Length: 407
Image 1 (spheres, one colour):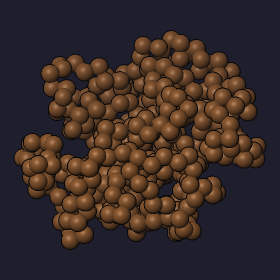
Image 2: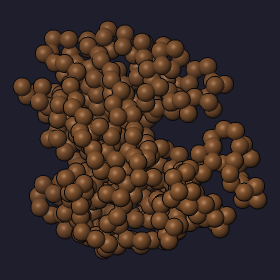
Image 3: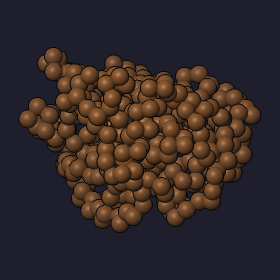
Image 4: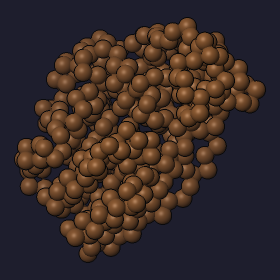
């Protein structure tokens, strides 16, 4: 069965569906760096199918450049990623999708429109805007439903979607999708219940054609007994700002990394890179780690005044936060600084690396996050990871949908 992925981001949602056996027709994404990530991942999946992953690994090691990698696959693999703005570019995207479909029908549409307008944190800077255009992106999503008429769709977003503006947007969304022929149901799911080592709640809206025998899936919670050390301990020690293209694993794999296919065959580490820090921040990090070792969390009001950069000591008190043993949520802010994602090892004294953030989100180690240029795209990678849907969560959703459609 095939699918169209809208608002694709780095492709976390798509990775889950692809791993479950669905076939992507097209990915549509506005961010150029994320489009390169999607293209590189599409190349990976193609090369894996034809047993030529050594070529992909050569790219990760820096032996060949991105253009050489892309030339190794049919042009339609690269062309299946469309860099476009959904809404403004719909006419062009529709035509490209029809060309790629070659007369086939669409089984599924998946996607998660930008969520800042619905999030509790994201609403504050938008209060002055009466009509934030992002709150109406569900309408643009619906135009793709009307155009390609899939059996089922999956719409992912933040829990705030259900309550923003007193529930107005969600109610309008339901009415609109029902009007164009779909039954609609939404549930808030926690990624931790699906094997992801973080508490990350997302609203998953599933719609299906009214004449289709289908029900919103029942998900059994996975007994998740894995924690921070299960995703960090095999990675080599690094210093702030250290940049190496590849590194060796520090130890053998473990039960979590193997069972969840995080370490899935690649025998070296990529993008285990972190941002540099100034001495003041490092001193605060050291203080935060020492407190956590004694079972306490650092509050911004406890930061010595001569080191404090944020004068507000009444709000956002957890500005500096060490990744504790308990599940730690990755948020989009990680692209701006690492203060909320301090590595627990005082000897390393840094924020977490790109690879560590990717693992918290359950991305496999052979997943490469691209930038605009062929460099180590640290900031771009953090942004893509922070906004992503965890692939393990996406895979469980995909499996349940596939079972019903095949059944």
